[in-house]
Length: 177
Image 1 (cartoon, rainbow, N blue to C red):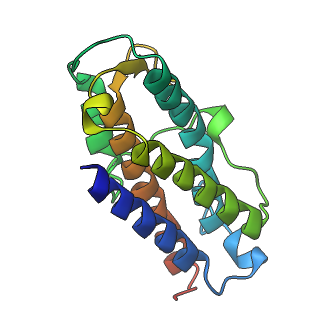
Image 2: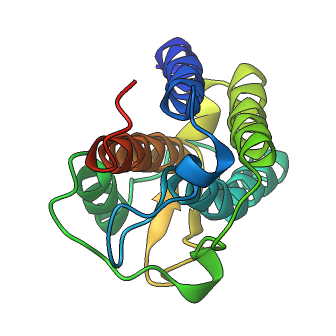
């Protein structure tokens, strides 16, 4: 499981570089339509959403509250499924997670890489048993409990979703690459 996730993280990082490849700053920040995010906005949204999850994963790994495996949260399992691309349901993003209008493309990619490297380091320094040992309240929906392995699945599905959306934004703008 961990080895597969580490491989997926590398694939996600490559995909982020590929979706930005050859775009000018103006192109990367161009919205493909009303109410739609640009390529860069999709990537920075992933960064903003991932940081609180990573903070909670780190805290739970440092100070576990359970000795053995805990049940996965039902809502968290549904969340992971709902995040898989292509998006079937549009959900209003919390204000704190909305991306800025104009983003520095190099900084956006660096932050995207840093968040995913942080996840990779966490995974390299833990075990599958550790990831099933604890859970936390979602930083976005307090009634949802997320087991650590579900948090990883959520982060990866969310990144895949927004990479899909970024590629779609690029396609809609006629910026094939």
